[in-house]
Image (tube, rainbow, N blue to C red; front, side):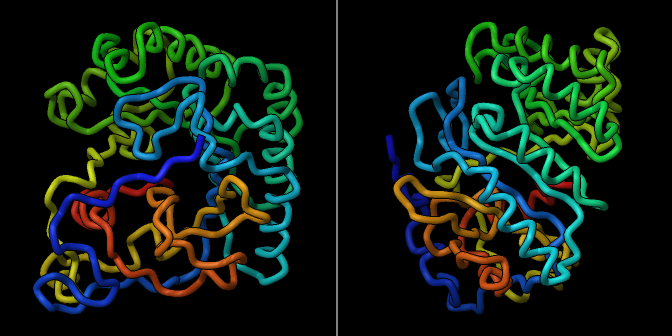
Length: 318
């Protein structure tokens, strides 16, 4: 099934890549050096979440599975061009739905200096690769491989309302297994989910982690990432060039200054490089077929750019 996501319901806003609705010059972000490269392994997922920004599900194959050869091609390009690459992230869908996930990880970890980050719900797709993951751990150690487990809330009722009945228990089983086996762990939750503020969320997660011997510091904003809500239909200010000074924020701090994502659209002959993990479908953020082509500046012409990155201060990697 292919999908076309609706355009943001913000009349007049985010229509022109260069100029805002008020006629001001839109902010852009130049590439300072590619340090994080994401691969969307495919939009298929074992569950359907109510608020999934990419609408992953057991039926959505709008983004096809990447192959191990696809990943190798981009890693080789980065190496040949001397890019300052530090981290490779894998997202989906559920990355462990992709049958090439373990070879992809092995390729990354076999390259000196590269870290690997996998975003997973830690449910059945991951667990079926338990022997292969243990083999990776024994071969490469745990210092350069992090698994970030999606746990929307510390309470099963709230989490299951988003991800389906019983999903909290299954994710906790996977998270506990990863902890017992010594894998490096992060957790991703939602900043204001369930009506709690961030302090309450972190306190609740801290109690959950302590009760289950999960070695994640809930006070650490990287170890426990709490992401702002993403709804492109809600009103949000457009980001102009003047905003950098007003907000006292550098464009170099945004994801698109140092990261890109590789996707493969259903039916496409080859993968494409897009500006970031949040905007895999919008054609204006498809930047080219190679990392070199995709190194051009990015116009912040989408509500996610404003709400998530500039005003929310969030990032998908460390």
